[in-house]
Image (cartoon, rainbow, N blue to C red):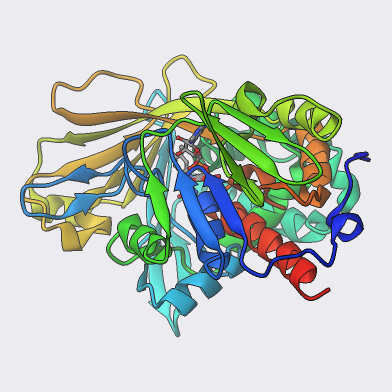
Length: 425
Ligand SMILES: Cc1cc2nc3c(=O)[nH]c(=O)nc-3n(C[C@H](O)[C@H](O)[C@H](O)COP(=O)(O)OP(=O)(O)OC[C@H]3O[C@@H](n4cnc5c(N)ncnc54)[C@H](O)[C@@H]3O)c2cc1C
């Protein structure tokens, strides 16, 4: 438990309805915080020269933008993000999500395709004996996901141990589960093994069901624009050097200049917070927990590929391929197929974690991402409960599930609710 004073202890009659709030970071967590707290005077500080929710994207000559990374979302696993999109009138569309999985020898393969029926999407496999066997192993795994998704004792059992204890087919794990889940979590297989199993089981129980995955209709720019349209001030290329908090408020230091705020929302990655949050009695315990959250940087590329447009439309949308060295996979998506509104002339792919070099590479982006371990999940649960009148934390790493966009919205909404409690006193 943290010894810092909680909001309810600190709330005084001095509470001023309109607060001056600084938000650090312009990812989904920072921007959703700015939106939820829009009745206050909010300023966002971002170290990069662009807002980072959509700013990594690649502009095309026809004025369209390729989202990097190409994020997909799911109505059951992202209830808060879907409700926010509804409120902001952001158009979403269902994703054609057929896929193929190959080991590095390229002979061992598994493929599935989708058919839409009654607003649901059903996955099918070709009638081949090896596919039937894998399909049956998958159905058993899917059953285990439902069986243990609410069992909190599985928060303490790592995914690697779960697969072993429950004798999940090793062929299924190697060909399908590791490539799929390591791509969703953007990590290698060893890192995936350390995730708390319940969190992955819960996610799979929803996203592997018949409800299809979705995308923001015209990319993440839509939601970035909608969230930032209410912003008071946006300071780009403004790296916060120091935050000093005390009982009365918080001070933010940039380039030697100190600015005072009633409240600061720290919406940066967890592992960088130790670089600027001053250690004192209010922060020392929470800083220890923040340090436990693991991060990982991986590459995503856009490349053109020889092949004609019609041929690609007959291909599966998603291709998972084991790296020749094993232990990790790459995941490629045909943009012509999943992003038809881009009107691409050439066969174009977005590939996460490519193992080879391509001479037709158009853009490479190195992106940072929170991972999880059994220990970090316990630390995150403590950070979720942290309350202080002068500062709060927002970030996808604070998710109840896998760190994805939903966690950013979830954490931002928590801050709004806590500050509202303060207002209502
Ligand atoms: C390859 C890849 C694919 C993904 N695919 C999906 C997907 O399909 N679906 C999905 O839901 N999620 C996906 N994710 C995860 C999702 O993108 C992240 O979880 C989410 O964007 C993180 O948002 P955030 O606001 O918590 O943090 P960030 O977006 O990391 O924002 C933190 C911001 O803080 C800024 N900052 C840091 N330090 C300072 C400082 N000192 N001063 C000022 N600013 C600072 C940083 O520059 C950054 O802009 C993917 C991630 C990756 C890497």
